Length: 332
Image 1: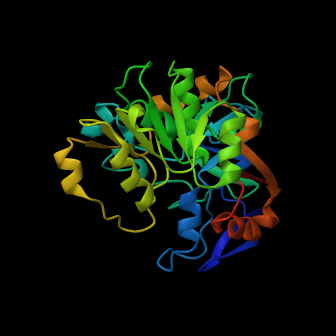
Image 2: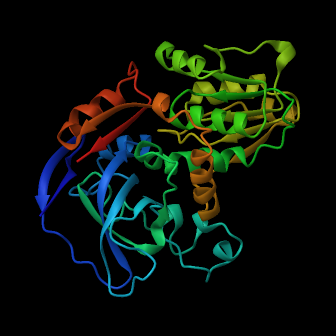
C-alpha cells in the first residue's frame, strides 16, 4: 500500500491509502523524499471543475525503488529529480525544435504528474523513466525538490535580452521570483530590484542580498526588462508603468483570473510582452547545474518542511494573503 494526499472536495485534501500500482515497461517506482507545493496546486485544489480523487504534486524528488523490465539506465537507490511532463519524444515540430513544453501530445498542456497522473504528494509514485534526471552529489534533497520551479524561473530568465549592467526588476518575492533573481545574479546581473508587498517575503529577499521595495522604482532607474512572477493584475499594471520605453515585460506568474491592462499605454510606449510558459528538458538540466553551482539559496527559499498529514492545513495557510511562507515541502 501507499499513502497519498488526494482531492476529495473543493479545498479539501484527504490522506488515503492506495494499492501500489504495478511498474511496467519503461516505468520506475520512486520513494518520494520531498514534494513542493506550487501555486497551481493551490488553484487546482480549490477549482470546482477539477476531478476529485487526484493526487497533486509536480515538484518532487525521490529515490528509485523499483524499475520496469525495459529500464536499463536506472538502478535501485539512484537519487532523482522528476520532470513531471512527458512529450512525444521528437515526433512533433515543437519537440524537434527543443520546445518540449509545447509538445502537441504532451508537455505542460498535456500529461503532467500531479495533474493528469499521480503526483508526488505521496510516499511512492510510478513515472516514465524519461521523466528522471540524476541529482548531482552537490545538490541537497531540498534543492532537488525545487528543481522544477528553478527550471520555470530559468526559462523566464533566458528570455531576458538586457545587458548585465542594466537595471532589472522582478515583481514578487515568492519562489519563482526569488529563484529568477538568484539566477539573474548567477548570470552576472548586478542591479536587481525585487518588488514585494508582503514584508516577510521582502525581508527574505533582502537577507539573500537583493534590493527591495514595496511598490515603486525610482524614475531614473527605469528598467528595460521586468519579470512578473506574481500573475496579479495590480503587479502587471504597475510593471507596465515602470518599464523603459521599448522595454520588455516577461510574464511567468500565472493569474488566477483574467487580467485587464492598459494596452493603449503599452502600445504607445512600445512595450513587448514575452510569455514564459513552463520549461524545456534543457532548462531542467540547466536548473540542476545551477543548483549544483550553489547559486540558489535553498535554505532561505524553502521556509518549511511538513508531513503529508499536514497537507490540508498547509494548503489553507498558503492560500492566505498574509502567509509568510515562500516554498513549503511535504515529506512522507
